[in-house]
Amino acid sequence: MLHAKPWTTAILAACAACVPVLALPGQGITVIGTWSGERPVKGGMDRSTVSFRQDGSYVSVEQLPNGTMQRAWGVYSATPLSARQMTVALQRQGWLPHQICAQAPGFPVKCSAFTPPAAASLTLSFISSSSFEVNGMTLTRDAAAYLLQQQVAERVLLPVEAPVQPHITQPVMPPSVRYQPLRNRGGSGCDDMQQNRICTVNDGHIVIENGCQVCVSP
Image (cartoon, rainbow, N blue to C red):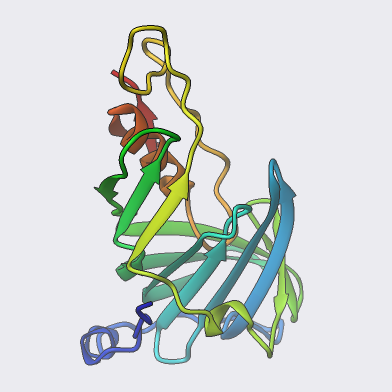
C-alpha cells in the first residue's frame, strides 16, 4: 500500500507565488485548519476531510460509501464574497488512486486511469468560526483528522454487478445510457471515481459536464 506525500518541494515552490486570502475581514474567521464532515448518501455515508495550510497548500481525503479512499493535494487561494462567505479555488497537483479497476462476476479485471479535474472552485458558507457548509455538507474543525492519517492505494479494485444479455459474452448497459453524477461533495469535487468504474466495466467513454466526468455507454 502506497502512502501519498503531498507536501513536496514542488508544491511548496509553487506556493511561493501564491498569496491566498485566508480570513474574512472583521469576522475573526479563517479557512486555515483541518475540517471534516459527513452526510448520508445512497448506499451509506460520504465522509470528507480537507486541510488548508498557511503556506497556500491543501490536502483532501474522501471516503466513499463503499469504503474506497481518494486523496488529492495541491495549492489553493481564497477570496471573500461576503461577511460569511468565501470562494476557495483549488489547483490539484497530485492524487491517489491512479488506477480504478473493476471486476464483474465471471469476468476478468479491467483497469482504467483515474484522472480527476485539475481545478475546482468551492463556495464556503461559514456558520461560525469553527464550521462551514459547502455543497450540502457541513464541515467542522477536526484536530484528530482520522482520514488524513489513512493510506490510499495507487490502484483500487471495485467489485461490480453487470447485467449480461443472453448470448453476449461481455457486460452491457442499455444503449445511450448516461450515468448522472452526484452533486459535488464537500471539498472533494465530483464523483469521478464512480464514473470511471462504470466506464471501465461497460467500455464507455468519459465526457466533461459542468466540470464533472460523466460516463456515456457505447
